[in-house]
Length: 396
Image (cartoon, rainbow, N blue to C red):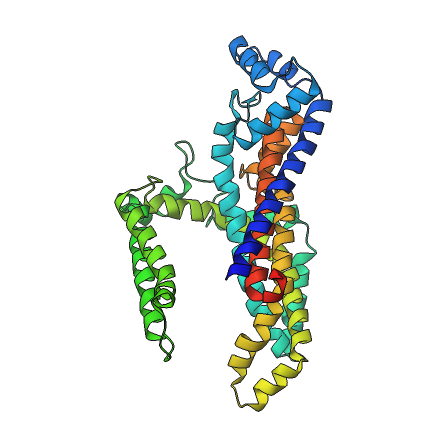
């Protein structure tokens, strides 16, 4: 436990240092691209007081060393400046775009890797059979298809020919109420608070985790601290559910959740179809390498069932390359979302980054690059933490 704690602290410090270096590089691009106030002055709707406040906040009338210091401090304190495109604080734009990106790409990554791990593990165990060739052929077909092309195909069939999903957007608007019109039975969910439902589910899940930990406790006597530590995960989940049940945070109804899921289904499906092949093949290759090890033969010789050998012995040791791929894919998925977000008119970080670049909105562009860096670095730290949990040798 102590070695894992030291490992986590060391990785957190490395992540902060990496983010600091990336922020300095973003400042260099920001500094040599010209004075960002010039674009604001060309917009007559922006008040001179706003421009003057930004000049003082970022030290734009002082030397580069002062500007670098001010820029780093502002980025780490989330004072992102003013967007000339939206004529509003950059924070307000990011508050709108960031949840969309996290929902779309976070959900796509989770689904993709769950499918990839399960399917790759299965076809590796069934190597040489027809199911292996069919899965590989199908996944590679979508993997080699351009993202804009598969997006247009999904929109044509499922939003135009069969109007099961909307053509654009993140959620119903006053001028475009797709979900309310095509799925009127969902309107009955408007009176049910999402936080209450999620809180009840979390409380039940926490109680179930505590019960399982208590039932499956070792037969040998445990110390009081060990007994408490086995019950802590379930208690945390149940406490989180209780907080949601008492203090709602998002002010969302179950209809809002269904509405968001319906609008995000097609772009999320496109991301999963494009990306799943790499995870399937990587998991298959890793499983094939592990299956040749001596401990797999020993497990079979002990008379363990095929499912237990595949799940508990082979798969656990095959997860390490997949975890690395997960961390690397986060950066590429967020950066490559620009095309898909434009195809589906799903305005997240990718779309606003392109808008900021084309409109020379330097405050917005720099802030989005900073946030993408935070997401990628955080993903790498999570991957390293999983590495440390799966393989104790990494902590040394």
